[in-house]
Image (cartoon, rainbow, N blue to C red; front, side):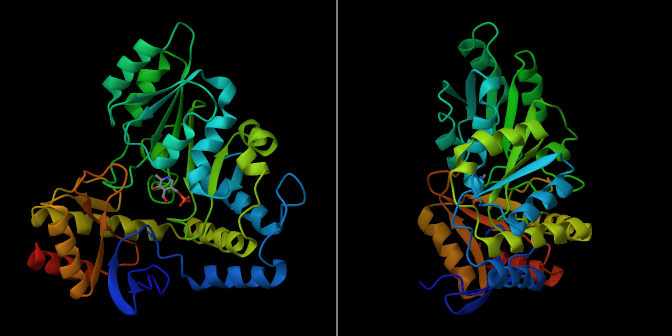
Length: 363
Ligand SMILES: Cc1ncc(COP(=O)(O)O)c(C=O)c1O
């Protein structure tokens, strides 16, 4: 296995062969965008690999600062903190908010990074049933004593099936406790909401107790994680969260490329329109093949059918026909795994039609 030998895109080279590619998370095809690559190369010549010191010292540089400036612009927030990976996002958020809650409540199918994070601030952690506000209400009632405040941690969009967390219902449930919500919005930022600001924008929600973190490695075509918000919150991250101050920041060429990716998505909202249209096209087509697909604007569809062997067989048949889709065992997937498709803004209608035709043959 040589793996991926081109940038991920509507067409991607895997093990020496070019495929129509409906996998991964490169929702806007920015990872190989010429302007993104150029920005990275220029920064490489100018700054080398990275600062070789953390941001507690001389570790800031123009590329990192530009990412944070672009994030402020994109999300229309006071400030932004950019750090090593999206995986660290919930950790950074939970630590930054630590003096505002007494216990953590986590969706039982939350991403690995939330599970790894939940106990880090040293408060009790409780699980509630997947996407179930009633179960959350029960657990809050059972576990909290008078005056205690909860932090709810969940994915905004769950990576396997692309389902959106019922954040409006959660907000109603935690309101009585003065609680906080922290979303890992890695699959929603850049994609959901009128301006791509994620799950909260999708639901039209904004309040001081609602927070999110995201990755720049998916929709934005770059790399690294971030939190945006009020100056006080971000200032706290800069002064006291170890993952931000105690780690060598993102390699400078990658930071420069990431800043360009954010800028492109900011300046070209039509890319999001194209993604929406392609999502509708794909989901409608899949439904006509008998595959369950909701009508949300999340560009992910996954389903389980038969055994692992059968699903791997379908994946192989598609690969033989020049189409790459994922077979995944991942947090949130049933034991046998799932077949999972993602669609990008850069897929043409003809490419989506071809996927549907080939699926109709192999299923
Ligand atoms: C929900 C979720 N959170 C966090 C991450 C990790 O982000 P990153 O790859 O930037 O570390 C992923 C996957 O990559 C994810 O699916």
